[in-house]
Each structure stands twice: as C-alpha cells, then as structure tokens.
Picture: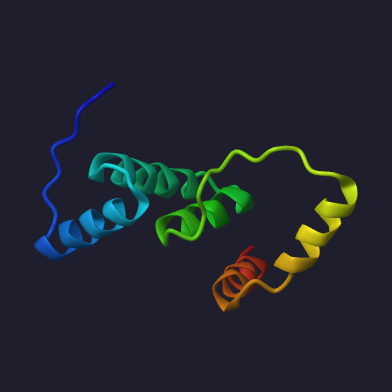
Length: 98
C-alpha cells in the first residue's frame, strides 16, 4: 500500500474529521473512500459515477445484509421508492449525460 501526503485546507480537514467521527471510522478510511469514488467516476461508467457522487456525499455506504424473504424484500423495495431529492437529482443528472 502506498502513502500519500496531502495538504488540504483546514475546513476540509475539519469536515473529514467530523464525518469520520459520525461514521466511527478513521479520517484516512473516509478520505480513501472518497478518493476511490472520485477515481471510479473518471472511468466513464454511469453506475460508477452515481456511486462516486453518492459516496462523496456520504449518502452511500457499503453494508452487509442478511438474506430476506421475497415478501419482505418487496416491502423493503416499496419503502425506498422516491427516497429523496438528492438521489432523484443524481438520476436526473445522469440521464442528461451522453
């Protein structure tokens, strides 16, 4: 694994530290995830760009979930429809891209 010395404005560091604290993670882990998402966005894959934008905003987090029964799955999917203007704007932006 490589090391990267990165100078960032005090405000960026403060916000990274606050986010890391909220998520119970290290600043390094949060910054690495954000950088990884940004690099993925450059690869031109529409799904990767969406994941990168959501990840950089802290909207998308990797979770492991246990298997659920089909009826429960349908209920979960129904409950997440229209989950908010942020996700809706991601989708709208991506639809406008070539």
